[in-house]
Structures are given as structure tokens and as C-alpha cells.
Length: 217
Image (cartoon, rainbow, N blue to C red; front, side, top):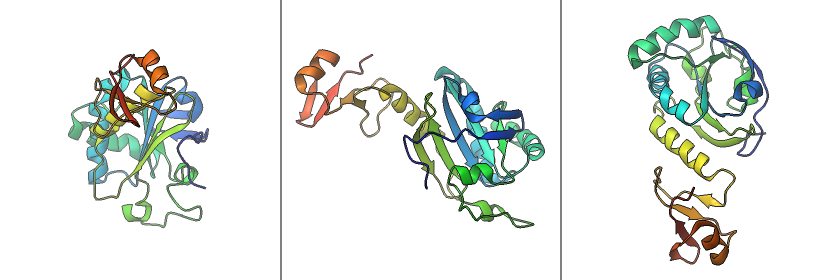
């Protein structure tokens, strides 16, 4: 069965280039992002890992941990980080899971259960390992994205989505299309107008079912 939004992420024991972790312990009370790649020393993936490294201060501001996944071994990850840091111009201080046995890729439903890695494989053999998972502090998946090998992920959008998730998590709020931090948010229909006004102040009612509030605290 697919890993869906609001499913608890499996508490896998993983080996990374920075040591071993149980995922739930590693997440702790933080938000977390797991982003996967089909192979080390590949061009698009190197640019993506570089982008993640460049955003280290932004992840920290949001109380968010990041962990990579690649279907290669820990020693290869350590060697690859030299290229990542050279290209990205920033230290890649986050761990990368060594998933050469496909345990994580299968557990997170990125590969069929019967998948294996042939000798002399190419990135195409694990092409579907191109997903992003944003996980909340209760260890539940809040967002997933999957990309093809030919399109580099937009980490500015992942950062924006994280902001939206953190802004609305556990509240009767949502964000509209193209929302950015500080902009008005949508009040959920679970609140009638009186309850919404009492909770969030004056509403900007565009339609009976589309009501905005001033980015409330």
C-alpha cells in the first residue's frame, strides 16, 4: 500500500554517511524532510543536493531536519559530498541514507516490492527513487512530491510548501494558490462566519465558501 498523507512514516533503522539512526528518534520534535535520489554521482541529483546545502539556514529557522536517500553505500555518499559541496558552494552537513539494499525505497513505496538492483546498474534502474516527504513532529507524512529524472526539483517551492504546512498545521486554516509567508490565509468551512470572526478577526469574504483572514498568529 502506498504511503499517503497522514500516514505515520515507518520507524526505519537507517545507515547514513554520518552514522546510524532510527527515523523517529532522528525526527524528534522537529519537522523533517526526506528527499531521495536514484544514484550518487549523477548530474541532476548533484545540483539538488547542492540546493539543499545552500538552504541550511532556512531549514534551521523552520526547525526542520533534512535527510537524503540514495541507492548507494555510505562510503560513496561521503565521496560524493565533495562534489556536492564544490558545486553548491555550501557544506552538505545533512545525512544521506545508504539504501543499497532498497529497504527504505521499498518501505516508502518508491519501488515495487519485487524490485532489485542488477549488477552494473544505471540510474534508470532506480529512476522512481525521486520523491520528497515532508513529515510533521508527530511523525506523520504531510506532503509528498515525486519527480522524473529529467526535471530538477524546485527547493524554493519545497520551502514554500513547508511554510504553508507549518502555518496551517493543527488549525482550521489553508493557504491559497501561490501563497507566500505573510499573506492572507483561508479560513476553513468548519467555522461559520461568527466563529471565524471571533477567532481570527474581520474576514475578507470573496465567496460564501472562500473567506480570507489576515495572516493570524
